[in-house]
Image 1 (cartoon, rainbow, N blue to C red):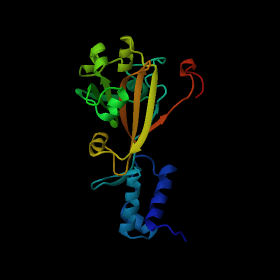
Image 2: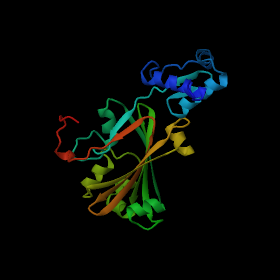
Image 3: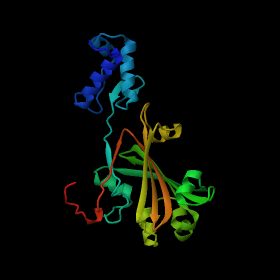
Image 4: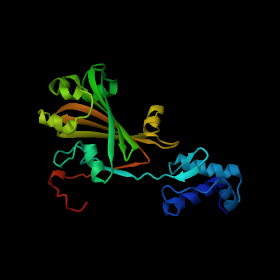
Length: 257
């Protein structure tokens, strides 16, 4: 006889059904009453099993409607190709990737001038509190919140590329805009971390209880000089990142991955 708590047995059984497709995305999860009968457990035990799956981001609850399996499709981002000028783009890198996956992009913007935080200043190699321009994007895939992206540019660069401080989208993307102005980013340093979302992040990304966020911090360099710091916060339940460690500029689009 299993020594696992009964609520975990309930959760394990439902998790297997989600993974093998017996409970497909968007399907209603059996009610507490049905789980009580099926597993011969109390209501509290059935509810605890459901709450465990909610905390794992596999199911969600709606007031008065019970539980359902998350229906949103995972979006896969190739972080090596992202912003790579060797590859053709339809708009900025985000829009290109989403459209290439046969899905629909949408984003909103705000632009602010603010003092650089200690962490941002360190990456931009400026003094803490030095003026920086923040371009903040709230991004969606198929109208579902996908990520937020906060990019900080040093004041000296904004003087040379004034569109960075203008509100609204830069249609070709900031990386291509800067390249056209003579600032080609030829090196990136990426940092990856996970944690639980802040209240603001949970609100903007509409993440459920127990769903972590993926933090992707990219510092872009032109020669030896850092020109921007980008912090992308992605929903942990809807995103997957991959990297290709080779000379991507020499690879044909038709070659196998």
